[in-house]
Image (cartoon, helix red, strand yellow):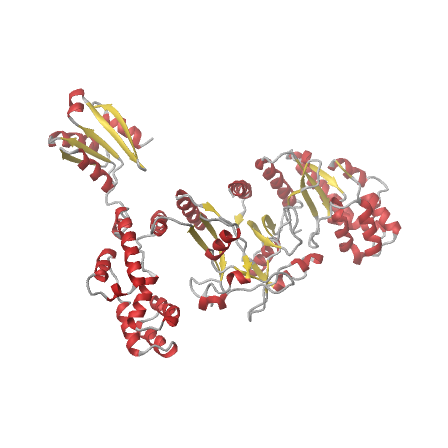
Length: 351
Length: 285
């Protein structure tokens, strides 16, 4: 219970950091609200008995209740979260329960293109990082791209959703079995099934695969829905790239460096001297000697080094150092004397 | 939501201070587990549809799930809490919801006489103080004393529970109406009903009322169950007094509480001078 409580408080913190308000919907909804929303899975919904009132069923997820809440209250936009249990009459198996928690984060309403999608993926990565559960990757795709692919392969439109269901099982069953299901159970031609199997093997670095799909002659460019999807994905991937969330290896800080000794100029000796005093005191430090100020800031930012000791001409003349602290977007700036700068810094590193 | 979150964290803190572990039971139980536990209120239970599996119903409170958990896991003792929602197909009205939170603190297992009862009442007072919601009092009574009273008044034993139900409504309906219900609907004689009405007006400082009931010639001393109850209450009141918590308690004969499975001490916290229910803590005795 403690592990769960701690995990939930981390998750709540991330959600609230993004400005979401907590939502608490009832454990059951009107049956009509849930009907028709879950496709093949509708048979897994728990119904409440007819005891004379309105027919209800236990909620199957938290997104439909969220949508119902918005519609019921006539809201035009909402950003909220709900951490609560949902109910599915599934066959219980390892890791698969009939009653289990979901941590839902939902955004509704008009916005800049792909902004909510970007935010949600960002939140997912922040969350998983802060939960410290290990190295992870986020698999991403676009429904319109899947539709486009199915059309290109020759799937009749009325079978799109059911073939999607089959493709969804690929993480649990081998290609051959899915191929068989698509042909024998769902009525695709062998040729169509084969073409699908070829396509769904595509996977790789977002921007790389994206340009491959967008290049001249790509079948996807002939499909209107796919073109939309490819454009959407380009916006999303660029935003994630800028936000340094695209490369999964960027998840952890590359170093544990606490202080960057930045020399504005070319005095390497001074750099080594200052860094040396820090190292003697057990402080994790690096130094950089460069005439251009932006280089120092960029480096600190990329490596996420929280403290900087900046020395330029002015400082050398006055016998001082500029101490800077980078924290969540703001920069703190103090001037300290050269003599006992390690002591001054140490006080702040270990308050 | 913030107010609720803060209240729950205060409540959790008090529960954990007393060494309770958190429990998390499913939202529904087997129908057979819930059947027969809630007396007249059983009609308020939400059933799940028969979809081919075991028949289930949404939990009505958190105490029966607690008991089921103990029985299922063969435990001999447990002190735990659960803060979760329960479900009742009641008529919704002000403050009365069909889905609402309960903060349950439960102790099971052998112990020194009245020790769990004392601890639970203590927790209730700590909780209400730390929630800082204002002046409150804890109305307290004992089911065996009520049974003794009903016997003394002439209520046939098979009607004890149903008359208890009537008495329980006294905080919401006037004496006259309850008297009428007991005679016309539940078949008591007018004389019996009148005697009950006189008794249930008894209320006051715990130790004072207690000595009154225990004095020579008191009808309660002739009833074995009542004698047990009076002894229990003496232990409890003395413990609360030593713990400086007795000033919050009012010994109130009109308190009956709704559920059939209460067999010993029962209590209810209200805003001082009022009858608005604040919180309920349950106890299996």
